[in-house]
Length: 217
Image 1 (cartoon, rainbow, N blue to C red):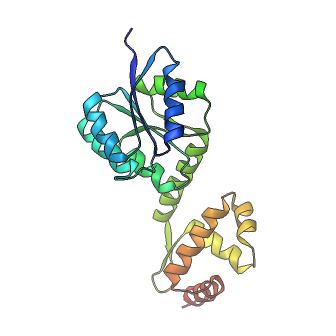
Image 2 (cartoon, rainbow, N blue to C red):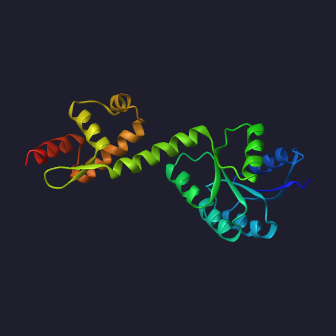
């Protein structure tokens, strides 16, 4: 049975070399190349044509996302796994759009990493639980932004933004709002910034005052 050809790409040399040695212990996997820049990963992928690529988003010369786009365009059958510590939600969405078939945290065990590589090579799509939760939250934010209500002057606020603003008006802190609405504190901050931007307010209290005034006009 032919081995799975695996290409690794990570800017951390020690981590990448160590990971390569761990992967080479697996009889079904052959590490064909170890890369430390996005450009090197894109070029090496075309040369070695691996079955699976394990790549971080944070690479030099060209980003991991850009490298994935280049690889996916040239080698659409190659399965790409994002293996990262990045907590930027935009990276998750961009990676999926760039053709990634899996998005997993570096906190995963070696055993589960090998299972992920094997499953993705067989056509599965995998997102680790912490990443999946963030992806769901991101899509929920996008969906909520489509359901909006107009204030008196035509300003659009989503239902969630209205709920957040109502609690701000009652003097709730971000943490208290997050607990009340069962969302993260980060998401509350996103909504507050969005409301302030739409209301052209400099403070959250000013946004409350402006919203009350516009609702009654």
